[in-house]
Length: 55
Image: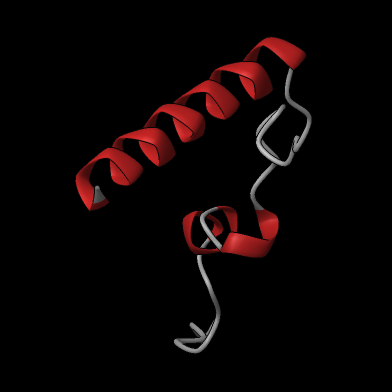
């Protein structure tokens, strides 16, 4: 029986990017209202701080 050097091993196939299982929640773009409010507060405070520096 001859060996084929150009064939991938099982480990090679399993670690290929296209063969990996998706991570649950990795593609989620949803965020809570609390997270949005926190970001909004941070942006407002940084905007106010930059206005104070300009005066």
